Image 1: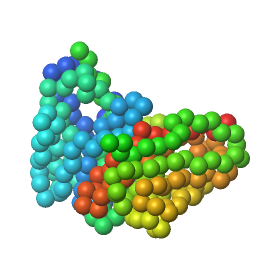
Image 2 (image 1 turned 60 degrees about the horizontal axis):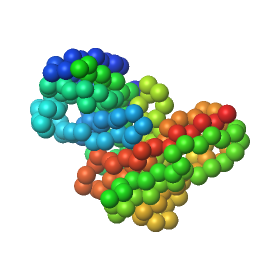
Image 3 (image 1 turned 180 degrees about the vertical axis):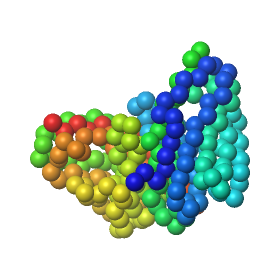
Image 4 (image 1 turned 30 degrees about the vertical axis):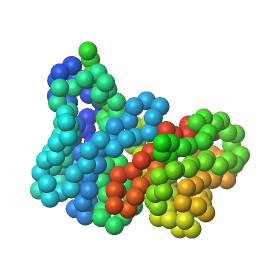
Length: 112
Length: 112
């Protein structure tokens, strides 16, 4: 049973465009939702994270939108750049737990 | 500033062999984790530790063992390697107040 469903599997965007990656969850006990960025041959790196009491969080060109009633959250990358080409993972965790649950990942390609 | 260091980076094992994947961190983090990443499947938690002398199972612990004798080191042991354990293994660490984790660059393990 996949606890965090991520879509799309792959995404191709032109330079300067907006990249949107979506995630959905079922477990209402999740209370922390981080996003990770992974380049080939490297480990994931924390990009941005949000708690469900906030509907949106922005850090530079990266924005998380959170819809608690729909149990969905998404990552928006504004003005996408070729250097943003990577695999992005959403994740979720229950407060007090150490078990971070990951989505399956989205491979983003930004064409110049 | 080394962060999380994993060794070896690559390894090929024969079925039935054993090996230890090493992980060390220099950030004095209490929490350490082992994940495996299979193509298109995201990351799955194998084992985790909340401090020296304390370990616990994650989502996919079968076939693996861990120990945590010091804060810095968290080795992962494969006793009888099986083809299903072919994967990329990531070690991670975190502080209690910052749930997101710092990842190493991984060990790519093939079992033939």
